[in-house]
Length: 303
Image 1 (cartoon, helix red, strand yellow):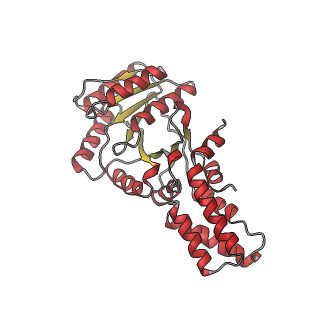
Image 2 (cartoon, one colour):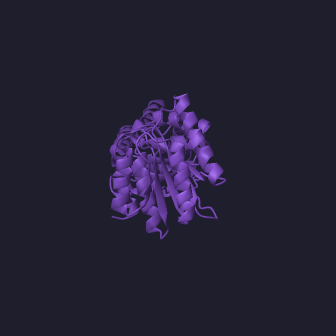
Image 3 (tube, helix red, strand yellow):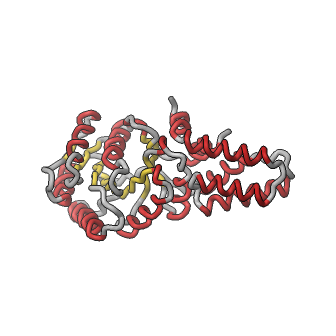
């Protein structure tokens, strides 16, 4: 299955709901009325596309009806173009420093899939012919270290870990030392899940980053926030708070294959201006894909 078909399959729930609603609204009313526009707006907001993008699509649909009349106006094409336009500033390439290693800190609330994301990213890096190391800096969740080690064995990626309950900053320090010694291209740091409202846990994350920066100036070079796609617009609050505490460089949206709220990718990118770097559309190691705005818009709105 090629990347686009995998993406399309992953966004099937969101696409089906949107397509069904748009067809019902458009066929039910060949003329553009206030009621039709309200229904269309509700359908777009229901997919969590956000107020800004929704208004952008509605304005473009109105303009098309005014210039072309009812005939030949394709709401799907208009919506796809507007979403693509919204995401056009998205630069999703993974950073690479001129000197190895590039350190990537993976952050987020509990249960978003950070550990799995780190492992899948390491797999993607290795598939590109580069080397990766994983650091188990979630020393609080009982199974996190074991989970990362299992992924490491499965994907043949070395894991730097300490005992359960160890100081996460000390583990991060050791991991940077190991990555430097091994001349690894990338070090992926799995941090503990923390609620964005817990000030003390956010301070601990800042400490972890300071320790890495001391050992390797400029580290972490990427701070990726992992968001669960099924939480919809609630993810926006998480992104805002994490961005205040540690300067985020990008987003990874997981679990898009199980939600009808896939539009939140567009809303968050538009509001925060943070690039979506990867999206998760399944359980397998290669189901984490680099984000492509054009393909994403097509998967959402292709008839």
